[in-house]
Length: 297
Image (cartoon, rainbow, N blue to C red; front, side, top):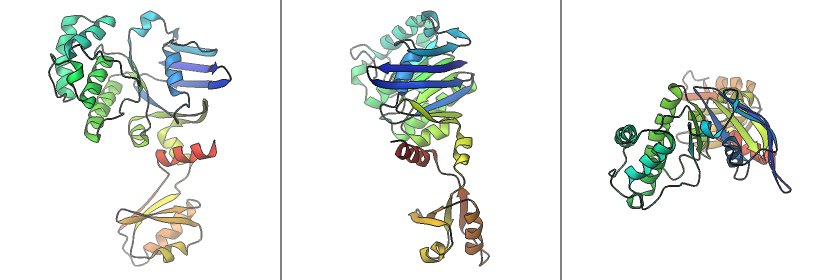
C-alpha cells in the first residue's frame, strides 16, 4: 500500500504540490488528473525520491521508499526512455536485469508480452525501426516485465490508437486483479473513468476532488437526461428546470437544474405510453473535470 501524507513541494515562488494526501491500496487503481502543470509528474518524482518533498511523508507498506524498494516498482515516465540503437531484446533484458531479474526469465517473458500486446516487430529489431505505437508498447513491457507490485504510469496512452489503448488498459486491469497497487495520470477522462477505482484531481498543486469514481459523479447529482423522443425542443424546454438541450447522436442531452426535474421530464415524454430512450445520469468525469477547471482558475 502506498500512503502519501501531506507532501508539499515548492520551486522558487511556485508551489507545485500543496499538502497532498492519498492512499493507493493493493489491488486498486488511483487516477491522478489535472491540467498540465497541476503537479502530477512532480508527485510521481517525489514518490520515487527523484526529488525530495519539502514537507510530508511517503511510505510503501509503512516503510520509506529506499533504493532497494525502488527496484521493485514499475515506472513508465511521460518522457519515454528507450535506447534507439539497441534491439528490443537487448533493451528489455537490460531493464529487467536492473530490477534483479534473470536474463533467461526475462527473455521468456518478453516473447509472451510481445504476443499479448500484438507488437509488430521482432525481438531482434532495433528500437529505432519500430513505429511510435510499437515503441510505446516496448516501453510498457520494460516497465512491468519484472512483475512489480506497485506501478506508476505517467500518461501511458499518449499517442496510442483506441485498439492499442484497449490492449494496454486490459493488461493494467489484469495487474490490478493480481494485487498490484497502481497510480496513473492521463488526460483521457473516459479512460480514467473506465480504469480507476479512485481519483484525485489536482489544480495548481491543490486537491480539488478526491474519492471513488461513482461517489464523485453522484455528488454532482443526476442532472443530465438523455432522451430519444418525438417531442420538440420547445416542448421539452417548457418544463421548469430544463437549463439546456443539445443534440447527441439520435437523441438529445438535456441538462436540468436538479434531479426532481427528471421526474417531470419523464412524465412528459412518456405521456403517449412509449419512450424510445430515457436515461438520467450524473455528469461524466470529463464534464466534471471541465467544470472544476473553470471554477478553480
